[in-house]
Image (cartoon, rainbow, N blue to C red; front, side, top):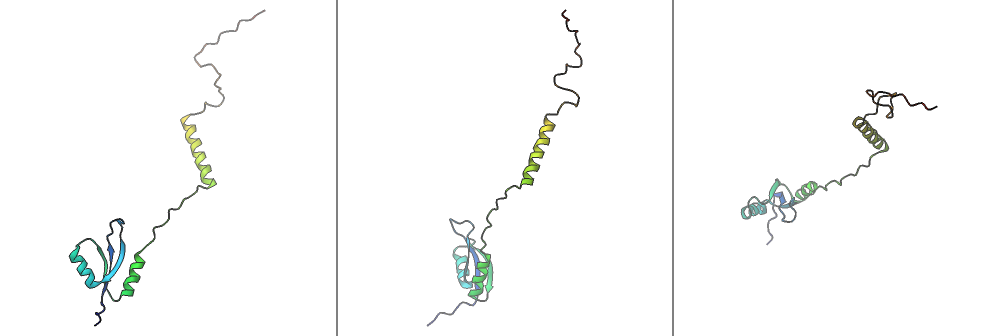
Length: 120
């Protein structure tokens, strides 16, 4: 005698020890109820009362997403040039240039000029 085919299916997130995220699994509604009785709260029910196993499998596969690969963005020449200009402006603000028309060799304003000794 054949067993009666389950009429309702569920998709759940199975808790796996090494994979904290778990994976999505499919079982019959009766198997889910038995699983919940034996291990209450361990697994997470995603969707219940699905009409057939194929639909449940398709739903479970749709939930399995591949994590996106991190994209490495290389700076463009324009971005590098702007970064260099920004750094130059910051450096100029940190070390201001002397006012125009003066040199670093000029004596301080409060110094008195002494006449140079003339030699015959």
